[in-house]
Length: 141
Image (tube, rainbow, N blue to C red; front, side):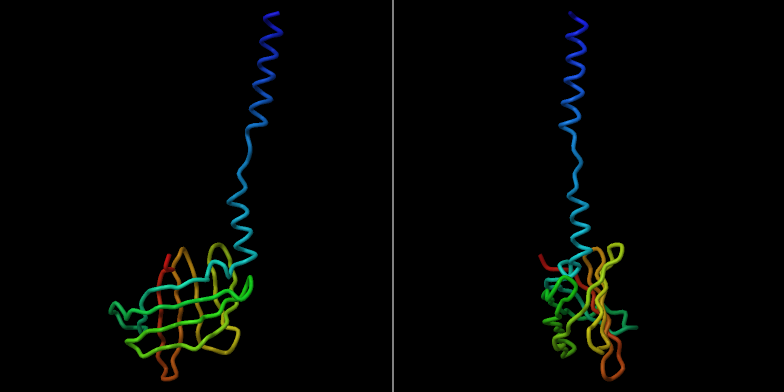
């Protein structure tokens, strides 16, 4: 009788442990979601600095804002830097993702592009007078 009781308990413990154990798929869903909807990672307002390439100063305060148009498209709604007298018009960007790197490519022929990696947005643009400017900023919470 003791052996049957022991076997019954062993089977019961094995069954309970198999039914209680589960795998978490939250991380996988988030990665799949971000791959299908990379624009969601870009949307928001960023504060940072704008500087001319080759200028080793800290740069000038600046902010950039994006809105989502589709799963793979965002619109640059604001890109302002008062020190430079800079206020960029609206531009639509296609967003693509590869290994956690989000690339922003303009839909039109603008000489501006961007990249979002680990919470930091970097944008490079060329001005009409031949300067190359770089914005680097973090998303506001």
